[in-house]
Length: 270
Image (cartoon, rainbow, N blue to C red; front, side):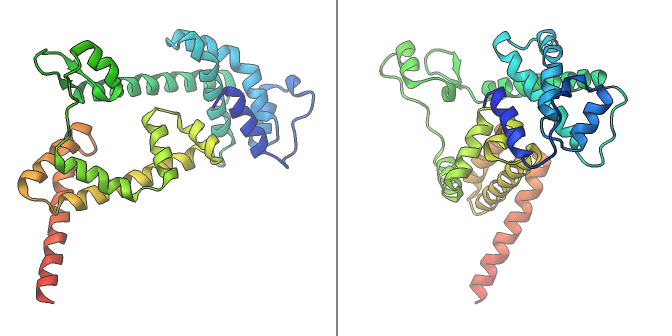
């Protein structure tokens, strides 16, 4: 969604609230913060209008690409506005240092996400046969790989156990949940996902977390039913994708296996 779309969403979500007057540009910092905390319509838009160039300059400092800086600035300021309007949150003594700190935190988070993505792509890459080179097949088109390595190249297949696990989990997802995970996989910001769904950023985070937890619970329960060699393949997959740390995974699998065996004993006794 464009920065304009986020602003429009903020306006629509505040329908019925008292609007910031036409003299909003004359509000001092404390009055603007008060207007945001009172959920006055147009207050967050005024925050974005007033401080967008400041945040864009910070984007340049933090290495945000020129084509992305305006959208980055809108997202930062939109999140600042949401944080300022949150009930019970302390009002900042000065708005500019508060915004600059938000820019710094957002830049750190972005850097960590990029590092995590690069690490995941590196760990998920396959060694191409007879070449010694590695490629992240998921982000290369088949045509591009075949053009490089010849028409006889075939994409590596996942173990049958993982294919069956993926199919089982896929059947659990409704179309809207598939779309949600698609956005997460494309690193769409939670604020943007929330705007698209008509919910807050926090609600979007909770929705993704609940869905992820449900799928992981189902995956662990499925893994507990497998033979030892199949279980090792699933454990290796979970470890490579960092779905769990090793100790947490071992504990969950022990619990799931105990429940599975208990259920089998109950079935035998009945």
